[in-house]
Image 1 (tube, one colour):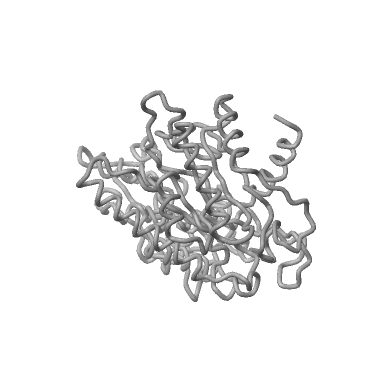
Image 2 (spheres, rainbow, N blue to C red; image 1 turned 60 degrees about the vertical axis):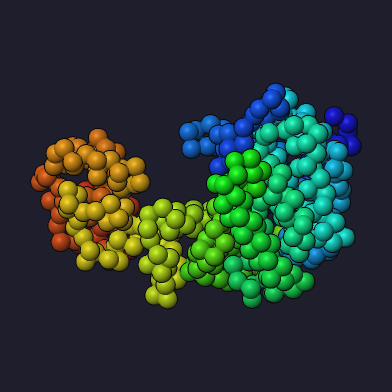
Length: 417
C-alpha cells in the first residue's frame, strides 16, 4: 500500500467512526461459481449472535462536504484536512483486505461533494464493480445520500446488502436548528422509496425464482442523541414511527460527541453517557421483540429512562399491581414482561410446564435471573416468599444485590436515597 493511500485510509476511516449503523446484516448472499466472498451468516463490526467477531472495512469515500451541520466533524467550516478516495482505490482496498482475511465486507459512507446524485453515483459504482467485475459476494453496506434520485437508489439496492439513510436528529426542529441547509423530506423520500422497492422485489421473488436480490438485509437509520434537548420519549417515538412506517431493520442511537464550541451545541466535555445509549437500545429491543408499546415505557409522566435500572424493570416497578404472576399459568406475552426473564427463557418456560409444574430449581436451570424475577412471580414452590414490598424497596434490593434483610430491619435507611 502506498503512503498516499495509507494516509487517506487513516483520515477517512477515522471520520467514519461516528456512524454506528453498521452492526448487523441478516443478509443471505451465497458464494457460487468460485466467486469471491460469502455473506451467508451475516456481518457486523463487533460480534454476531453466535459469538463470531467479524470485521468491515468502514470508511468514507470523502470527507469533503457541501453542508455545515454543527454536529458533524466533516462539516465544511471545520478546519480539517480534506481527502477523497477514487472509486478504484476503494475497490482495491476492499479486495486486498478481503484476500488477507482482514475483513468480511465493506461499509461505505461519504461526505456530500458537488451534490447528492454525484456522490451517490460513485458509491453505487464501487458496489457495482465489486459485484460484477470482481464477483465479490461479501457484505456491502452503502450509506444512501439524501436527495439522490430514485434511479440511483434502485441501482444501489441491486448491489448492496443493506442501505441506510441517517435522519440525524430525532425531531425536525432539532435538524433545522443544527443543520438548516438540510430538509427532512429529502431523508424520508428515499427511505419510503426503498421500503416499497423491497416489498415489490420480495413479492416478485415468490412468483419468479430468479428475481434479483434487492437490499436483502433491508435498511436502517441512525439518530444523534444529546446534541439537542429531545427527551428519551421523543427519541423513541420517532424510532417507533420509523419502524412502523418504513419497515426498518434497525434504528441506531449515537451519543453526541462534542467537537466544537458552537453555541447551539452542548459544551465541550458534555458527552452523552454510554449508559443512556444502552438504555435506548434496551427500550428499542423491548418494543421490537417483547411486545411493549413505546408509550408504556416512555410517556409524559416518565419522559426519561432510568439510568440506574433497565427499562423493563422500571416499567414493572411502576406497575406492581400487575404482579405477582404465576409462572405456571401466565401466557407468553405476560412472561416476556417479567424482569429477569428473556426471550429464550420465556419460550423454555412455556415448553417446560407442559410436562410438570415448574419450581424455583427448574427456573434456575432454565436460566432466568431469579434474584430479579423473584419479586414478580410465584411458582410451584415456597423457596422465596414474596413480601409486600414497595417499588423503592425492590429497586434498592436489586441494585445492592441484597436479599433485603438489612434494609428490612431498618426501613428508614431508604430515606437516604
